[in-house]
Length: 336
Image (cartoon, rainbow, N blue to C red):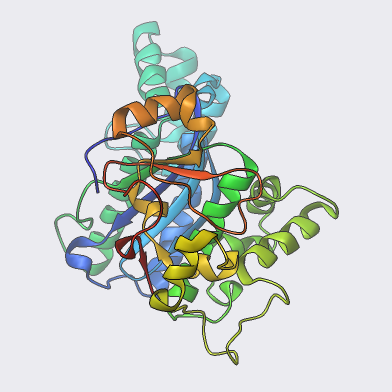
């Protein structure tokens, strides 16, 4: 991952990734179940909205919306979030459980109460603090459970700032939810249970609402999930090529991509497209010219060429990264 960390001024969407040290496949079924539970608790504590996620045996992807307004909660909400994260235990940094925190905020010395508020609020509404808390707490659980020591994660987490508009966020969400299909672990995205899409289909209300925002139109949440499925799988909403998995040969289709976008959206989303996770910013060219997009572009260099996908009906998708070639996709940008 690059060294540049791009953050939105107030509210931003991020595609964040992290990998197990030495790329070891340490996360079995139970470990992934615990990871999903930890993600929910940490997101609630941090005031972060999870749009979707996918955790595999040696890495994870999360798509989140982070708003600095999450820092502006009152004492009752601070205690509720604290209890969500720590349960009945005492946090090592404060030495307090949730009931003791509530007492300290209400009846303790003013200086102590204010210091507690500031420290808690500093951990909320910030992508770096969210990832630090998630990775550290999961590492502690893993080491305690498996009687190991040391770091679990190999490097700084990867982060792509994503334009906060439905068509761009929806595209990145689809790419994340298709990870297991690209890896050959499932033929359909819902067949791999450690994803936000599968959880939304199973009835998770928060994820259903978040994903519905990406695919507006008729039919409410059910209609939105149907449009999401169509984006991932294409017409007919079923795997092609005789039902034999979800892989697409990049050599067969790279020429079509370069020629102007004849490759279907469901096909390109089942390719490993590095700009989704290795760029520093992803959005329309218009977004790259203003606000958070312009700051991201200033930090990363000139945008790469428009990515010519059939799905991009609302505008060109531009990539902000010094690593990406200008003028379109290269062989190095796509992999099977």
